[in-house]
Image (cartoon, rainbow, N blue to C red; front, side, top):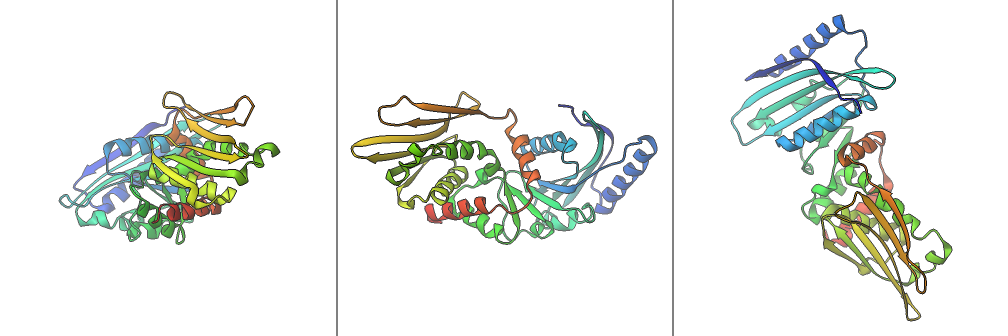
Length: 328
């Protein structure tokens, strides 16, 4: 995959917002005199990432996706507990794809003090007219009262960042006011696809009414979504679902009838980048199917999310059931 190359940049410390806006405009003007290809953008993507590691990962993923999802990238690094300050960097990037060249812009702003609690006023100066604005909370779930949500057409989150079931309830409430796209839900597509395939043969479906136990493992958000999805799509009793903390998501349905037992499981092993689905029926050899996972899970899930910027009723139904299962 080709990497984006910085062709021009500006940076300043202790600056005013108008200086960053003006510097970006100057860079655009200077670039147009030297580069024939025009800048193209289909949206403004605002990434909120206070930490160095999160900011590095976020900008790396967004730059890599520029060939398919060109956007003006606005990286916000808020530090409300520090002294009032404003630092900015504006960069023009060029990316050569197989078929064309893409030029795009990235603005990075570090803001300290009370202004860090009112990022909406900063973002509005950089949004592109008549194009959607996606606000991505890189390492946390947003506070429902965050003013920044007011400028978002789409809110991108990762329910893996949910620290407790109450966080899922807040996410559900947000989804009823704004379009929310969940990176965990995108990553879990492999689990969901394999899970749906478990019961495609008629012989397998006949065991659904005999399911007595559903064990779901993983972090709070992803395991809640999978548990909610299983209950919603299959019509299982919520009382038979049990959660357990784990690094990776897995689930197993155990069915019993006439003294016989059948299990239907989907899991990922720590040492492999693949998900394995296993069906064990009485008197038969195990039936196994596998699916490989992408090398870069963040870039892959973000690409999927940016392709689907509309409401997802299946995700919302799974999240709703997840909050009920957790008693949130």
